[in-house]
Length: 136
Image: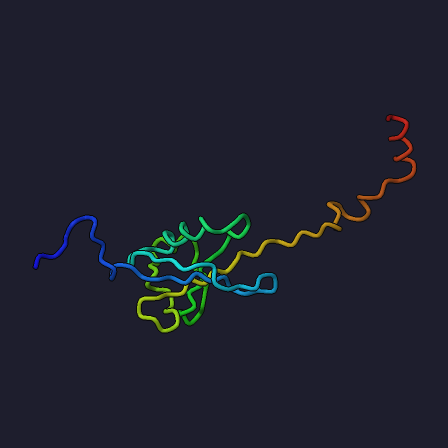
C-alpha cells in the first residue's frame, strides 16, 4: 500500500491542542477562552495572532505565562517568536495538549476625581476671576 504524500494530506500528529485560559484576578474571573489546534512547531507569536482574533477591545493586551517554568514568569513579546507552543505546560496530563495562560496587562487606574493640577493651581483668586468675567 502506498502512503498518501499529497499536499492535501495533513498528518494529525503534526498538531497539538492548546487550551487558552485567562488568569484569574480581582477584576476578571479567568477561565477557558477557547481551545485551538496548532502546528507543533508554532511559536507563541503565531498563537497570539489566533487568540487576538477572538478577543475584544482592551482584552488584547496580554502576556503569556510559562506556568511550567519554576518562575512562572511572563514571556516578553520579543521572546514570543522564539518560544514554541511545546514549551507550554501540558494540560490535564494530556500528551498532546498544552495550556496557554494569559495574563492581562495592568492598566493604570484613572481616578476621575483627580484634577490635573495641584490644589493651589486649581483655585482662582476672587480678583482674577472677576477680571475674567469683565473680559467675557
